[in-house]
Image 1 (cartoon, rainbow, N blue to C red):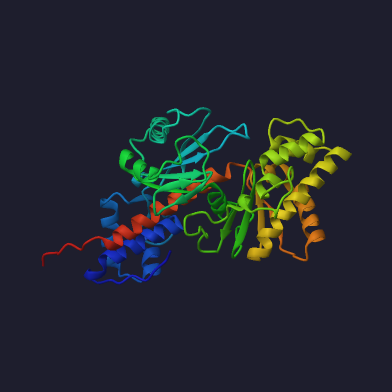
Image 2: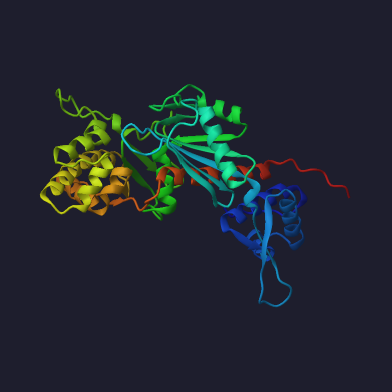
Length: 397
C-alpha cells in the first residue's frame, strides 16, 4: 500500500491517505518510520498524524524504549473507526450447517463476536434477518452499530442490478436486494459468491498463499470455481463466472448425470457413498468416514469419487491452465490429502494435463473467513480513498 506522498499544503489529503494506507499495511509505525516510508518532512508528518488522530482514524498504541533520546510514540489505525459484519448465507438443503454464520470485526481485523444461527431470525425476510444478526452481534461485542456489511452467498451477485442470482435461499434472490439492504440498514453493503470469498481466504490464509494466481474448485452441496488472477478475481459480466455445476455432460442418456453438478455435487456424492455402504448424514460425513477407514469399501468409494472429481478438474485445468488448483469445500476438507492424491492420480490417468493440485489448508468456515477479509479490505480502501478525495480547507496565514 505504500505510495509516494508530497509535502506541500496542496497535497495534504494525499499525505493523509498515504499515511493511513501505511498504518493499515504495516500495523504499527513510529513517526520516524512514517517519515522514512513517505519521504515527508518532520513537521508535515506531525501534522498528518495529528489530523488522523483528531479524526479518530489513528491512535497511539505505545512507545518505543531502549534507544537514545525520548521514547517515540507508536501509531496504529484506530480499531473502533469501523465495524464490519460478515455473514455467510448457506443453502442448507444438503448439509447440517446452520443457514447463517456471522462475525463482527473491528478495523484491525480482530473478531469481536461470532455466532451461528440455526434458524432464520426473520423467517425469509433478508432485511429483518441481517438486522437481527447485526443487533445480536453488536450486543455481544458492546458495539453501537455496524458500518459495513459483507455477504457471502451461494449464488452469483450482479452488481449492475443489486441482485443475487442462482440462489435457493428463500427471499434472497429478489431483485435489488443488496441496494435495499444498504438503504434499510444505513450502511455500505457488498455481496459476493461464496466460492469467490473462499478463494480470498485461501489466498490470505491457506494453500494458495504466495501463488501468483490459482483456481479454487469448490466441492460441497454445490460445485463452484473461483478464478484468482493474482490482483483480482474474475467474476464475469453478471457475477456468474465459475458456476461450473451448470456445464452439461454432452447429450446425457436418461438416468445418467446431465451436468457436472449431478456428477459430483453433494447429492451425487451422497448417493455414491450410500451405494458403497456409507451412512453419514451428509456427503462430507460419508467422505470423512471413508477417508479415515482402511477397507475395500472406502477405497472403492473414494476411488469412484476421485474419478468424478477428476472430470470437473479437467474442465477447469483445460480451460484456464492455472498454475495451481485448490480443492476446497466441505467434501474436499473431509477427504483431505487422501482424496487429493486419488483425484490427482485419476486426473493424470485420464488426461495429459499436469496442473498441480492441492487441498485446502483451511479447517474453519472458508466463506466466513473470506467475507471478513473482503469486508475489511473494502472498508480500509474506502477510508484511504475518502481521505485522498477530501476537500482541502484553506488555511489562514
